Length: 111
Image (tube, rainbow, N blue to C red; front, side):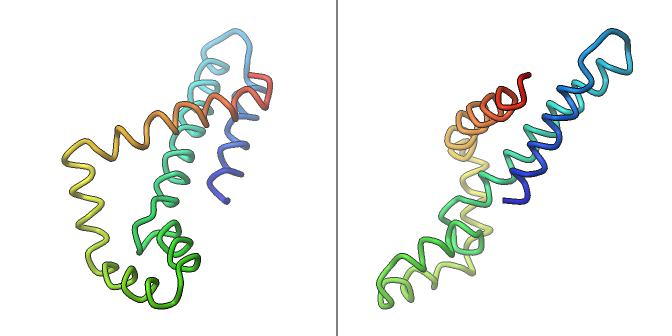
């Protein structure tokens, strides 16, 4: 949730900075980058891989027996994320969601 709040803050900065000049352009581009970075972090954290918050949510929704089995992959979570990154699967999953959510947040602020 904190990354989404920060993304909204960056979107507001970008909206308020719209205007002429190099400083305004810099602030707009920085605000857009801030939105995108924070949405990447928010959505990455929601992936259902156990060390991440999304993994904790999945474990809490499973019956206790299945949650215990699911939680055993936690030591391998970083390796799973690296494998997804290296194979390009992470980008194919994450970037359409990041693009959509970034556009949604920027449009919420009237940008």
